[in-house]
Image 1 (cartoon, rainbow, N blue to C red):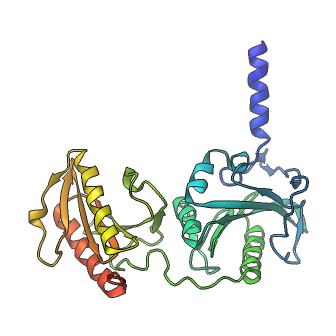
Image 2 (cartoon, helix red, strand yellow):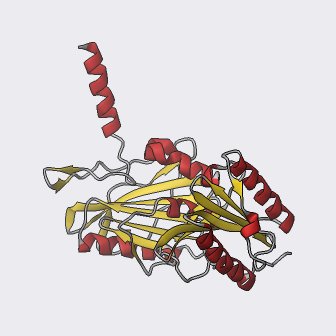
Image 3 (cartoon, rainbow, N blue to C red):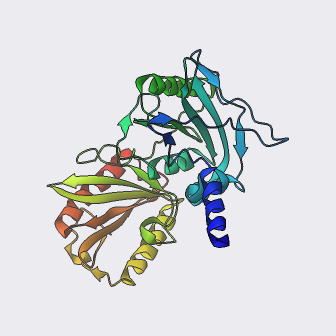
Length: 324
């Protein structure tokens, strides 16, 4: 009986922590209104956004630093921390004409725009619909997700509905207008060729790309060529020498898993590229100036080389030779 009481207490404690990135509570088909979030004593937290007229705050903002992030988002904290998390400010808002319709506005302040895009892309929902708020923004049935400079925004509602979606969109637009940032010189994914690219598939891996601890800051993109699915990747390094060293280290890593070298199949228009087979997939690795690039998990050598040619040409055209 004592053990059962302990388990029940644990369940109640876990239910008391609302995680907006994972779930929304529903009670008998009606949205449950959470308690207003209180700010930590003595912690200054500025308003997140100038409120549109149709909204009212449900309480003051709450601030979480790296030491408390897990209290808010539980198992997802390592992703944010490894990408360069600085601070989370969270606040809940309700529609003035419908107290049962509310959303939580979460502003994740990251180290830089690349870190913000890393967490945005790693958590992209399968039912995403692109928005015009920012270049990197999308909506789902009950949420909005936006990258704005070093900020990653998650607006998660109590449920679906046009009125709530409209309110969240206005709140996100108000935040973007009131927090101007310098335009990014280069967006993640700008170096990839367009032909065959799957829309919305570009992802920035902050660390341990493809399971290799020495490979960080890698942008990937999914392609479909001739009905076959494969991944292209690029990683801008500090210099051509660093790019070449990372390429060599990645190939050594693959060899530990039994990679077979088929670089003799590489055509002259991909000078210096290495082609290997790992079990039943193919990897192509090459450098263009300071950019490490290649093709990951191609179903055959021919498709890997075809995409590799397109990627190398795009890098030459779009700036891969810079700083050579």
